[in-house]
Length: 395
Image (tube, rainbow, N blue to C red; front, side, top):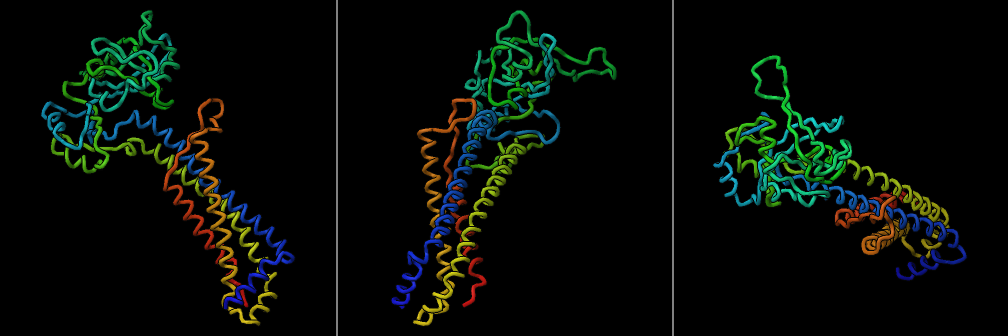
């Protein structure tokens, strides 16, 4: 049996007869290496961009948010606050008032959302770190902190005493069907400008609780929602079940993904699309493996008959090409994975690619899920291509 395999080895690696086939196999191997390296690089690059984008969203969105199931506000009295403080899973929480507001400044208008907050909010969301210009508002005065996009739209600056920002809200306590003036207006000074992302920066501004409560005519102890920072080991369903009995009104608890379902769905969809697109490139490369194996089968059939005549088992003929296909696919894929990870490590520690038009290095992220996904893809596709190329082989 060993002699038969030695003779097979001599026939298959003869320089005079294998030169053309070796070139084809080398091309197939190179394509697998390039395709697998590209797949891990693209997946890790997208993960880096995803983590970079989420870093801004995570700094602005709470881990959990308690909101009323019906209506815009719900009662949060001192008893509820004390009960929430006694829950071990909750680290910090902050009641918030939020309503839509109409902004105007020197003939320019914009619609945004005003969040009324107090000092407890800073323990949940690091708003001070997000302020790029100026400082946080003083709760004793009518001051606001606005997003950078709002500042650009309205051409606003900080501490502009020549003209104040005008905020307009709809009156809620009007007994008449037709009111002469259905709006309530307040003027405020801009004390700071925060920056998170374009969508957030043009949508939100912050003020003190008293300022927003008076502007929106919201009764005392009533709030729009509660932002919560809690242990990451608990789920929103568990937290909702634990605090449901504290509220007279029905409430629901949402996590970050539930607060921004469209954003997270878009990221997941893009990730899946990128994976399938570059997997298709890998599939096309594996067609070259199938082609090279078929060519080798056709070329070596006469040699195999000689080997079979001197004792090489015919049932092992197909296995030779099957294992050869696996070697080309898996070894090439593994080499490509190593090359891709090496390039990613260089980019991570010694950046050589930068975001166009900036000095910011292109972000990359190493995740075991991406590596496992590439290995699993290579294993399955390599197995399919090897089986396919030897499926119709006949002795």
